[in-house]
Structures are given as C-alpha cells and as structure tokens.
Length: 329
Image (cartoon, rainbow, N blue to C red):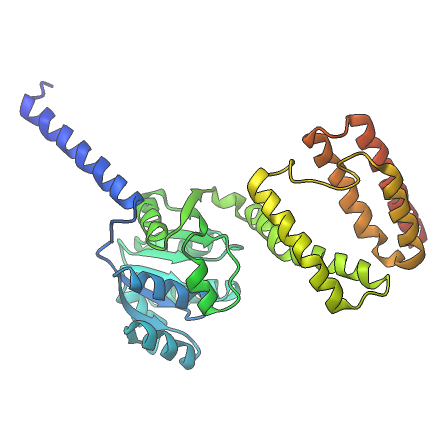
C-alpha cells in the first residue's frame, strides 16, 4: 500500500508528540485528568491522597471502615466522604485500595459481587506482600489492575507524606495500565521498576530482610552487648553511630565493598574468640551468630579480601557450632 508524504509527516508528528509526552511525564510535568477514589484511609492511603492532592489531582471520594480515619483524610484534602466502598468505586477512574493487606481481597470480592467496577477503570493496591492477582475479579468488568508498592517504611502519616517523594516503587499488573502507574509514581515524586507478579513474594521477602530483619539484627547486637553487663539503653545509643556509618558505607561504596570486620580481613582467630565467649556468656545467641558468619564469609570472597580456601575455613568453624546446637537439641 502506497503511503502519501502527508501521511508520513503526520506519523512523524505523532511520534514526536508521543516522545514529548513521555519526556514530560518522566519529568513530573504531566497530570492525569482522572478522578481518584481511595478505599482505606490509613497511613499509606492518607499519604497518597495528600501528596496527589498537593500535585493538583482530583481526589473525589474516600471511604474507610473507621469513620474517624475517613473524616481526617477528608479534612486534609477536601474531598467527599462516602458511606460505602461501592460509592467510591463507582465515582473513581482510578481506585486505590489501601486497606490492610489481609482486607484487600474482601474489599474486591464485595465490590465485584455487586458489580461496582466498570470498563476502563484502573484498580490499584499498594501492598508489598500481595501481587495484582488479588485484584483480578475487577478485570471481569473490564477494569485494569495494578500493584504499585513503595519500598519505604512508614511509621505514621506525617513521615509517610515526607518519605513518599524520593521512594522507589515496584510496579506490576496489566501492561496496558503501566503508563498510568508511571504517571502516579512520578507524581508521587518517586522512581520505579517493573517486576513479574509471580515474583512478588520473593521481592517482598527481600524488602522484609532489609527492613524488618535489620531491626532483628540490631536487637541481636544489643543483646550481645547486654550479655557483657552494658545496660540496654546505653548499648543502643552506643551502636547507633556504627549502624549509621555502615548504612552510609553501603550507600556510598555498595556491597561487597562496605563489608568490614574480622571475616572481611580473614581474621579467624578473632572469630574463634567470639565463639568461645558466646558459648560461655550467651550460648542462646550462638545459632544466629553462626548463620550470619557463614553467609558473611561468602560476601568477603566477593569483596576479594579472602580467598575460597579461607571462606571454607570460616564456614567449617560456623558449621561445627551449628552441628553442636542441633545435636544438643
């Protein structure tokens, strides 16, 4: 089929306009002309509503099972408080379901049972643990589904409003809605990457390790100091500069270069002293210490400060301790 010069020119202009639009979105200069509804006015739902409202978005409706939470968000962003989730869904082009993780499926089922979704609607949850699969019943009505999760920890609403900008988000769900997801993230002042929905639990496990288990590791270190007679509050304050310094090292030089300490420098004699003292003064902490040491030896090899043989020597010592624990149990 012959294509006229005019048609080619029009195509070039269209491609150029698309490129300009994408660039504009990525620079945070594009705002969707969509009505946004929020079901779940907890920390995340409130923070998202506040930040998007400040960016000029139209938050049309809010519902939370707790009236006080609904009232608080309505007062902050000046939207309408509805008395049922279906009213919010039917009034929203983009529906955020920001309830607790365990409540999302129930909300979706109740809305689907009464046909409260519609074609062209985009339904979003912001759970780290759940994939977009939990929203699939909305697809039966022609809606598109997304999971947009900020890799961030939110202690309260004010910190959430402060920390959402600059966060990095994972996105998964219907690819046709990815442009909307990108626009939402950019409007929230964040960066993003895409993942496969089937990998969501492993992604969330990684997030839990560096967030939740970091607290566990810090508590473990404090308990070791407590075993020497140092008061807990003193131990906590004493370790904070070390914790912050380590996080800064990870940020500035990355892993494995940020690894320091006896395993990193191949100092097996110091590790043996640790183990002897643990056995005498805090044997209940030996198991976790040994597993962490076993894994740390692999990172030291990656750093290049010990060789494969040294790693195996370290790991053999740790495995001997773990075997003793198993035998004694």
